[in-house]
Image (cartoon, rainbow, N blue to C red; front, side, top):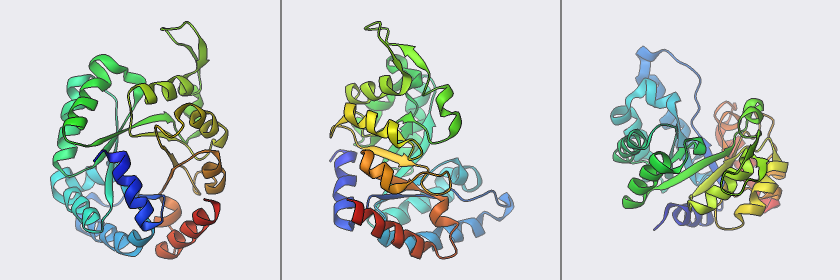
Length: 256
């Protein structure tokens, strides 16, 4: 089953649209076992309130892909959840394919990539290896930080039509053409979520990071068209992570 339908089923079964981002702060790299214990404890507390978990270089660098990280992915799967690798893949096609193959070998169910690299000899090999392995590709469309406007928000020309439009809307159009499994649009820019959703419709679900710590509002994002909230520091930095996750879940249920 295609990734976007798998996560949809899990979200429905769990009654949750929350993707936990394991964005732990820098810690002593010589004490990776302690970090691994923290991650394990976090998953044990929070897994009942989420549908998937997102990892990025915060954990791959100190723990290693086929050591600690694979152990985390296996733990995620044992809880009936999916694992997303936030690699922000952004290189030539052959490199992108190899990067993805390594992450998929470690058990990840989907990978996040940057559409700035284009299709031919860029995203195409990534999509091809992902489809062969029944994995998902989620594309950055507008990031959650303020500086995103310098790239994703710039006005560009669509070389196929000659039309001027914001870069993120052109990316949204390509999300549909490429049949991406998801589009990342920051919860900090609900007005852009709405515009992207108008292009994507129900074809490509929107994933929105930035709730809480970056100032994003869960209610505004969901009402604008977000399907999944990616939440990290708002949960993992809370005094009681399970309570923070539960409260956020209750809020999303009321909105939906």
